[in-house]
Every structure is written in structure tokens, then in C-alpha cells.
Amino acid sequence: MDLSAKKIIVLCFLFAVSCFLFFLWQGIYLPKERGATEKIFSVKEGQGVKEITFNLEKEGLIKNQFFFIFYTIISGKVRNLQAGEYLLSPADSIAKIAQKIASGDIAKIKVTIPEGFTIKQIEEELNTKLTRSVLVNFKTGDFRDEFSFFEDVPNSASLEGFLFPDTYQFSYRTNIEEIVKKMLDNFNKKLTPDLRKEISRQGKTIFEIITMASLIEKEVKTFEDKKLVSGILWKRLENGIPLQVDATITYITGKKITKISIEETKIDSPYNTYKYQGLPPGPICNPGLESIKAALYPKDSEYFYYLSTSEGKTIFSKTLEAHNLAKARYLK
Image (cartoon, rainbow, N blue to C red; front, top):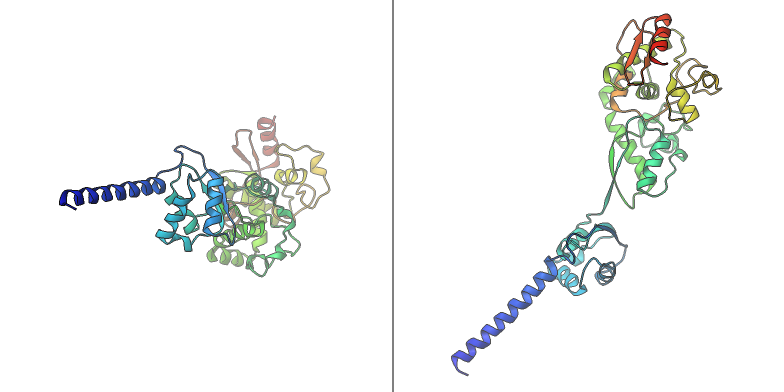
């Protein structure tokens, strides 16, 4: 064989190798379909690379099983494929899909719990994003051994007040108990040692502070107003004056409107702060940190009364007469 023939053979071989490598590169690094939407793909415990690959092709996420198997083997990822729910798309390359599954980059659901949400509202929000959950079935006694802030709370009390409002991320497989623990753990972190020391110094309990904070949370919006309202409510307690917090009535009735009727103020419920003196039996919502701090650090004033206008402005009054005039003016 002459030299020119050998060169042709070498060139043909190199061309073939180049074509094969380009073929592999395309199969591994180019997506099946650009601009495609994401979907949940499930990898179950015990599934091997062949079953995972078959399901990926079946779900329309990859175009060829060979490329996925080949890439996971040569990259070493075949040994690390993990069970879980993954957010994948045909717009993802095989390399990207393999990396997600090998690293355990499972899909996360973002859930935002606003300040002032009740357990029922939190339950409804979770049910729109995750599996059906029943928060009302959990009691503080279920978590007393894990969280010391429940030590002065009745075992039969609900978790109202302690499911800290925040934005959370959960996996699709997260069960309701794990969700609850994450929210309670967040509360545990937010209630710092300094805050706990101050609660103890004032001779109050965490349960009392959170109950008061829940009233404040539902009554007014700004931090300054919260501190003033806190001062008024603590002062009423000290003087044996009913708190007369409208939010406790709406908590009883479950109505979303804030305006209450005279008949509703006569409802026989321990949560009715028009009918019964003192704090209600427990929190009426899950307050944010501002409301907790306002309950702990009230602002002293000469006011004994307040109301909120339809625009959200808080009107404070020193006397009942002035308060009645304010009601006539702002609550028509």
C-alpha cells in the first residue's frame, strides 16, 4: 500500500471518528425540543439507569435512550442517580437532565404564608400547591418534646400562632408533618434567646405574648400602630376592661369581612373579647415578627380606644366619648 493510500485511510478514519464524536455531542448536549415546557418526572427508589432512561424517552424528555445511558456511564453519574421528583423539560440537554438526577436536584414548590393567616388559611394555601393536608389535627402536645416554647401551652391546643409566616420551599414528596416541623422550627429560630429572656423578665409566657401578637396582627398594619395598640390592650387587661377586639369575632364566625354586628358581639364563645375579659384562650392567627415584638414592647400612651378606617388608617382616642365620635365619623 502506497503512502497516499495510507493517508486516505487515516483521513477517512479521522473523519469517521469526528462524525461519531459530533453525533455524540449532538445527542448529549443538544436538547430534544427548544422552548418546551417543564414537567415533573419521577424516579422511584430502586430504579436503575435502564428503567430511568426508558421512562425519560416514554415521557418525551429525551430523543434516544442510547445517549443517556452512554453519557451517565462515561461520566460516572450512573452510580449516583437518585430517587425523587424532578422538574425536567425536552428543552434540557441529556447532560443537564443527568446532572439533575445524579445530584438530587429535586423539584421544589414555593409556598408563601402571609402574616396573619389562620391555620385554616395556611391549610388551604398548602392544598393548592401540595397534597391534601389537615393542619387542624395537629396539637401542641405532638411536638412538645421537640420545641421548648410549647412548655406553657396546653397539650390539646392547636398550632395556631406558631406556624411562622414566611416563604417556604418544599419537595413534592414532603409530607404534612415535615411541613409543620419546618414552620415550627422557623418560629423557634425567630423567637431569639433575647426575646425569650424579655418575655420571662416581664413575667409573661410565650403563649400569652403570641396570643396578644395575633390580636395585634389582625387589628392594625404598621409597626408604630401595632406598638400603640399593644399598649392599649395590655392597659385594658391591667384595668379589667374587656379587650373588645373585632378580630376575635371574625375568628369565631369565620367571616372575611372585618365589620361586625352588635348581635355577633354577644356570641357565647371564650374567644369573644366583648363578652369575656382577658386574653382569648389562644392565638387567633399566626403573627409575624413585628407583631410579636409589638406585643413584647408596647408603646405607652394616654389612649384607651382605637379603630381602623376603611382606608386602613388607625384612629386613636383617649375617652369613650371621643371614640364614639370617631366611630360616627369614620365607620358610617
